[in-house]
Length: 335
Image (cartoon, rainbow, N blue to C red; front, side, top):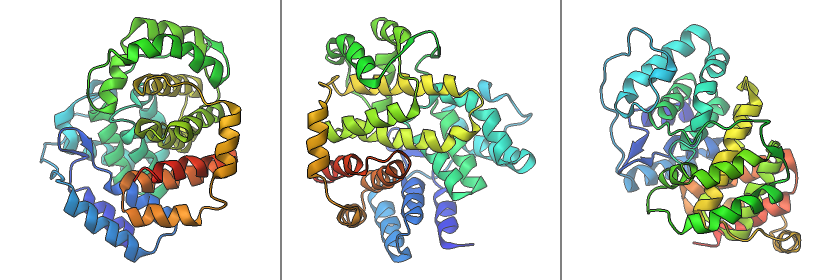
């Protein structure tokens, strides 16, 4: 077994969550480091530090799920993690990765914000690692952490730019943001999604382009440096990785827009950055990735490592590397 596969297998002895529904980021960060060509000694150093600093929870034993149930009947079953993993491992072995993703994603995408998007991210990184057992763990995590923000209706709303759409969201989002209870990111997203005024706005305004949502996410992160905005960037990256297996891409995109709009409200629906602000951020960003790469890796911080990976990959696809570097540099500077 190669070293990366061994690290992923070792982490699968642990639950996907620990410490009161916090996400186990070990596998995601390891895949990100490996995909960026980081030296194995540095990956091992991260792995050791992460294990020592997190009170990870061993995966509980559970019976196999038999007979095979429909995925829709399993959503939100927190106590079935081990059984769900075995279920998906069997499905992948019998049907192949592509078939399982095409069958599973229609059920899962309405809940793509599960565990602050981490279930979708772990699934996407498992695809990039081409590791069937890791994919099974990601899909199982997505099922058990599933939280539906409401099924979006593509085509029912007016398609508009992300600026136009977020301006409309901000009108109801700013007063709503002051009424939210404390909680984890996914809990606050669910509070927003249950609000009737928020849903009404989204029924009328829709961002119908993944490049638009990617630009929106990085612009908000660059302008705010907010932790939830970081998750919007890593989520849009993961969504893009999984897009080839989405059988209803318009519905999927509507779900992503709904989740990202809710995330915007949870951070206070801040004033949208003007183009002159973004131009200044681009002009002041580091000239290349090397100092940012070194700083993120040296931090041994799982979120900073994943953000480095996502910003680099998204910049390769969409361009605008200066803005992606500015977003990353701003977040790294937070300490």
